[in-house]
Amino acid sequence: MSQDNITYKGGPGHGLVGGGWNVGHYCQHNVFDYFADLPDNQVVTDLVEVQFKNTRKGYYHNCNHLEIKKGDTVAVEASPGHDIGVVTLTGRLAQMQMLRAHLKSEDEVKRLYRLATETDMEKFEAAKSREHKTMIESRQYAKDLGLEMKIGDVEYQGDGGKAIFYYIAEGRVDFRQLIKVLAEAFHVRIEMKQIGARQEAGRIGGFGPCGRELCCATWMKNFQSVGTAAARFQDLTLNSQKLAGQCAKLKCCMNYEVDQYIEASRKLPPRDAVLSTQDGEFYWFKADILSGNVSYSSDKRLAANITTITAERAWEIINMNKAGEKPHALEATRKSAAPTSVDLATQDDLHRFDDVLKSKKKKKKKKKHAKAQNSHDADSGTDA
Image (cartoon, rainbow, N blue to C red; front, side, top):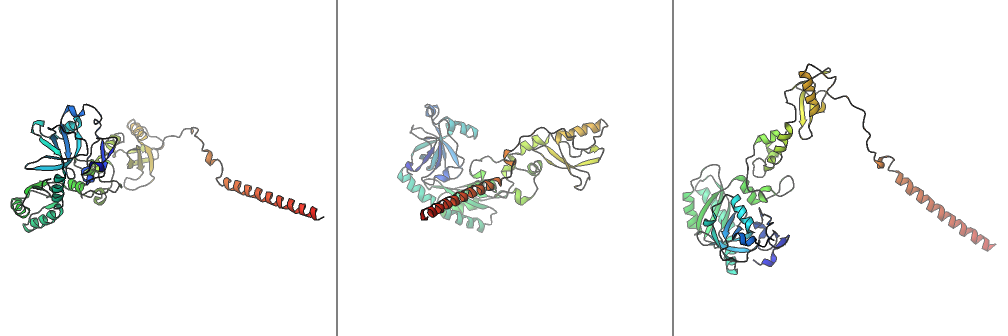
């Protein structure tokens, strides 16, 4: 890979944004290295974060003290052989990310060998070209063995001596016989790794109904469980077609705002509270949680005489009812309206601009007519 084909954002070592040898595959879950400009960044630790195909990452020791920066293609230690990946973090931020990922201690971390050479890249490209064909054939082998699993992707190690098969299954799968068949067919060391539906969607990629790239394919790497309670808190319609993402699971973005909805819902009155006024009794109909407005109906089962009031007004009526008092109506007595700002654009009809244009055109016609009359009078005087 030619390092000249890589574009950096914010200076060398900050953010890899595109170009080069299939770099797009290696930019998922990229972290902005805000420590890159510090002079002692490489001195603090020799740890380097390396990203492989899609979301797989590893941490390695730069024992040879090579001048490594973000975006470099490197050869790292594997078991057995070596693997090829792209450097995504160096220095202290790589150390922090390693602790955050709860990985093994630094003493057990493997080594970074060298910057990838042309020979390394030729071997890697040859191994990578076999991945799709291997995936198709392995699916047929699993089907022939009657295994209830789906092989979603295959990743070859940089030296071609090992292949990782990513599969999806509802329960436990006894794939010992499959491993023997795959080893005989492809003559490589086999590793099976089970992934979930959300992880598969992140590996495949795509766009959500919001029009943006899937969160699981860009920045999200820790998946939290999403339940229907999140939809209920946000008053979303329990429609599986609208609430499910491309992974056929509930959308992860349902968890983004649920905390704000829970906090805002605490300010609302209880749903079973009946508001008594001199006009009658009113029952909860619906609520706009974030704006703090509640709509009440005079009928318990139907939408009749819908009146919308604020949550503060609803609590005020509830407290009045507890004290044995009833207000005249749900809505509070309106006070004299405060002076409001005036929009100058609404003070006159906007068609006045058309009248101005018409008057200008009339003036031009009058001038032309006056000039023509003057020239005609001058010609008549000359003839006389």
